[in-house]
Length: 325
Image (tube, rainbow, N blue to C red; front, side):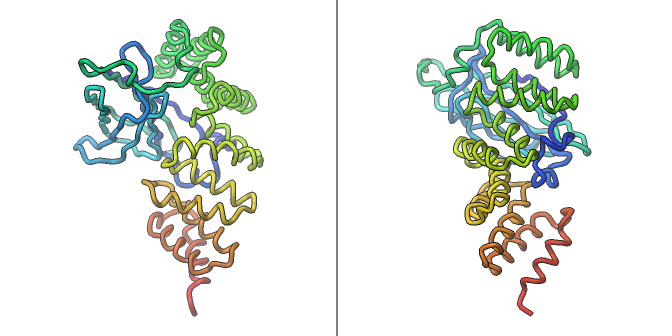
């Protein structure tokens, strides 16, 4: 069973999108897959979530975290399917369409329900966050009603239900995060930041909350705080190219050129469609360390992966200046 949620977010507000990733991600979609059991409890950490096209060509794969969440970033609109597998659950599949707008970045959520295999012990489902286990049922109900309202683009109704969820359970990270996103859409920037701060306080291990708050900190020029947040995110989701690219950008801004180059180069080792900018960051950081040959190689990768990027001309000029005469 899948529940779909579409939110136009982040790139429509200058403070909610890093200047690095925004160049590459306009019009793309971030897909959040939430896997849960029939009682709404989050599924296990490390269940495999495979994303494929409608013709079953594999696009990417992730493993759920301790909230049953898997994130796929930088996708384009189209028909997809998600398959969830695990040693103690029956395979589950959901088909859906990602709807996007070419002028702004958006987010879509798929909720997938799984069933335990016959004889599987409940204790094998994995460790879920303590906060998720404490959420009262009536707060969960308000949260789900809020998501349903968002699905209908009834943001006033969504805020009403999400605020009720937070009143019942003040540490409800998911509700705080969605309220922050709605505040951002409505251009209430300071309120959005406060809500993201509360979401991180409620659950410091939630990657999405930390990424949103880090984006705000970066646009405020507070790269040190952003670096701290993103370092924690990368420890939780080491193969996600978005926080890796953002972290590399922060490290560069802080003059940590060796660290920036190393972090940016990690992006190339994982699926990183729409994050070719990491190579440009790596090139700039390598130049700061007087490594022109290595910088040139990064620029070549950047131009290969993103030949029509807005700053491709400047990348070509920089590469030409590094080539032997």
